[in-house]
Length: 320
Length: 171
Image 1 (tube, each protein chain N blue to C red):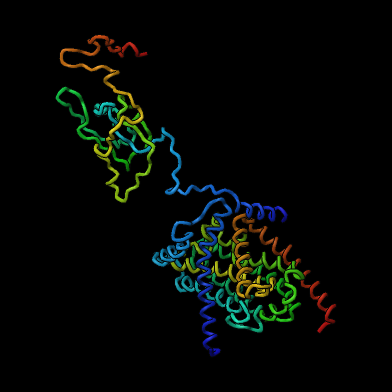
Image 2: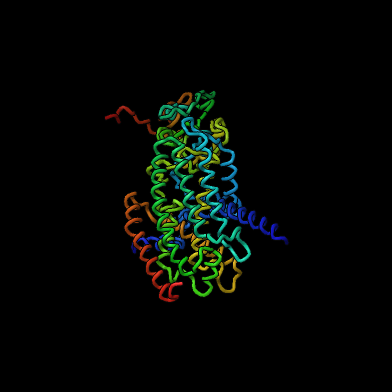
C-alpha cells in the first residue's frame, strides 16, 4: 500500500477509534461506578446495556441546541470546538504501536503539552461567553487550576525526556525497551498522574464543574450537542492522559507474548479504570487545598525529581 | 495520602460485594399481604356483592377519587349502580377500606398499574369487582348484622339476638 493511503487509514482509524471509545466510555464509566457502588448500572438497552450509548447519542443529537440570549454567541459556539480540537490534535502524537500512530513529531512531548495548554482556552472562553456567574466562577477556577497543574505536568515529564534523551514519543517508547520509566521515574509518574487528573478536570479535581457548588461550572449554559462536545472532550481527555501515561511511563506497546496493540490498549484501559475508581472513591478537595497541594507539594517534588534525575544522568553519561 | 489509598482499595473491593439492585421486572419484590395497592370490590362467600353503597368510602377519601351512585334492588337492598375510582388521583391511603362497614372495598398487594393514557386509570365498577371474598373469606355482612325482610325485623327470628342499640355504646 502506498504511504499516503496508509497515512489516511491511520488518521481516520485513530480518529474513529478514539471517538468511539470516548462515547463508549460513557457506558464504561457508568457500569464501573455502579460496580463500585454495589449496583449494576445501565444493563437494559441491548446486550449488557451497550446500546445505552446509542440511545444517549440519539437523545443528545435531537435535543434543542439552545444559545442563551445573553451569551456572546460566536465565542459561545467556538468554545466547545476549541476543547475538542485541542484534545484530538494531542491524540495525534500518541504512538499506539510501531505501525499505528498519526504523526511522529520530534517534539511530541512539547506538542502534547502545548495542546493541553490550549485546551484551557476552550474552558475559559466557554465560561466567559456564557455570561453567567456560575460559568464564570467555573472557568476562573479552571484557568487557575489548569495553568498551575500544567507547570508540574511539564516538569514531571522532563525526567523521562532526560533519560530517553529525546522529545519524540516514539524514541521515548523505544528507550523503555528494557525497563519501563515508571521504575526510575516513580515520582515523576505519580506527579504526572495527579496532574493528569487535574488537567482532564476529573474528580477529585473537578472544581471547574463542581456540581454541588457551581451547577455545572463552565458548561452550565450549554445544551444539546455543544454540551455533548464538552462531554466527549472530557472522555477523550481521559483517553489521552491514560495513553500518555502508558507511552511515557509504562513502556507504550512493549510487553511479552501479546501483540503491541493489545499491550497498549490493556495499559491504557487500566488507567482509564483507575480514573473512574478515583471518581468513585475520593471526595473533592477545597479550592485552596487544591492550589496549596499543587504549588507546595507537587511543584517542589517534581523539581527535586528533575534535579536528581539530571544529576544521575550526568553522573552516568558524563554530560553529553 | 495513605488513607486516600486505603479508600481507593476499599472501594475497589466493593466490586466483589453482592449487588443491592433488584432486577425488577424479572425478579418481583415481595409485597406483604397488607400492602396498600390496587383497590378492588369483593363479593360475599355466596357470590353477592358486598357493597351497600353507603358512600362512607367516598366521604373518607381525602382526594375525592371515589364516585358511586346508590340504587336499590326489588327487596330494598342497596347496591351501587356505578362505582368509579380514579387511580390517577388515588393516594392509596387505605381510608376507604377502613371506612367500609361491609369489607367490600379492599386494597390489594398489586402495584403494577402503569398506563400510557391517563384516562385508562379511571376504573369502572366492572374493573373493580372481583369474584371472591378478598381478605375476609367467610364474612357475610348480613349474616352478622341481621336483615330486615317483609314481616320480620332485625332480631325477630328464632335464635336471633336483637341488634345492639348503638346509642348505648356512645361515650
